[in-house]
Length: 86
Image (cartoon, rainbow, N blue to C red; front, side, top):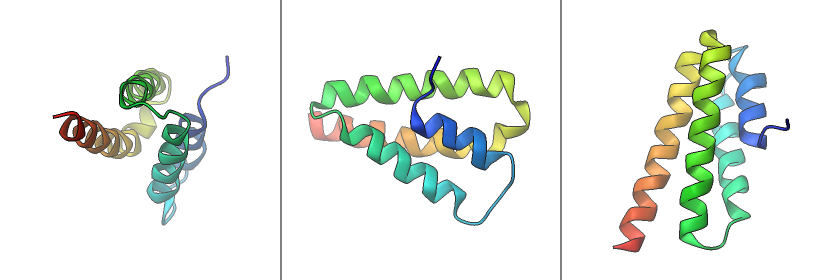
């Protein structure tokens, strides 16, 4: 099973803390979302990323803190979509 680009990046960058790693993952999430034009599709894509991050957290508990940062960014994106829909 192939993982979405952002999830693969979390797996690679989260293992070895580096300056700017979260920015790279945020850019990967933004690029991933750019493939979905409709806000409803974007919301589903974000939910899929959250699900995959939850699974990754189970298999890689050492990445918990880094995954939490990515989840916070995805939450901000979800809130922005909700504001746009209102």
